[in-house]
Image (cartoon, rainbow, N blue to C red; front, side):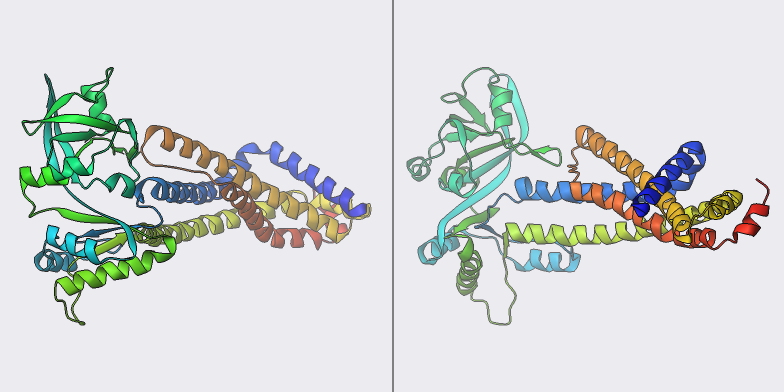
Length: 413
């Protein structure tokens, strides 16, 4: 009971002290505020980006992967890129048919090719729209969901029919208030009938994913040829077979290209986990830099708190003498100053949390950068600040507790 009463008294005294010198408290806490705000802002950025990568950028699913002529993820090496550009041949239709006939661990294997194109509908023109030639199973592989009409069919692909599946942005530009299915648009001056419209996909870092048109890949090859820009997309049997499916495709492509055991791959394979791993490495470096900056701020803020608390001890020397004369123990005096220094730092942490929260809201609402404030960051910010205050308050509180009551009473108030 005595300990609880002593703690409440220390808490009350500390709160009154902080309210009595607001400007000094603010200036004392500036380092802690900046440190906490920096820490929580970085954690919010990483948390928001992690969710964003998982939900939007890494859209291959847990069992999907892509095969490309070149894949550069993570550490960028210009020399390796130039070597790959010279050495890696384009993927071909023949290789796709070879993989399709021999791969046993994939349940879907699709082919795609793309370029920018010019679209017309009556007087409306869209430049630089992404035109993709796709196999009909790309809807399954990429989880494309029509909101009206349907996707491209095998018959349309085999017959090289001029049909088109529109992204949401193209539909809104050409047919904002009417049904698009059944209408005819011009792609590079050639008429295509619209057979479906995709569900809105949203944007990645402010760039819309809905400005596209998809046509049968055989129609695409008929228009533009099949020598450039081909890629493959695949789904493994399930998540457990993903690595084995990638290895199987890799082995088959190496066999087709007659690559020796010591020769590097002349193609690239990428899955969602590759993108996530690359992002994790990047955020790890960001987090380490943030920790270094936060540590400097915290130490500086802690030293300032210690100096201020030493000044407070000097100001209250007479008061400490009176308290000891009426029976206060060293532990009571020490507790009072430790609570005060901890509250001082924790209030700075709370202000830092508020500043970081306001920054996160502003960034999320006015920029394409995703921010997500985890509760763990709030607890960590305030808790870490309180620990810093507690640590740097040990010396001032010990000095106050060791004051001789007689000498302390002689000090002028």
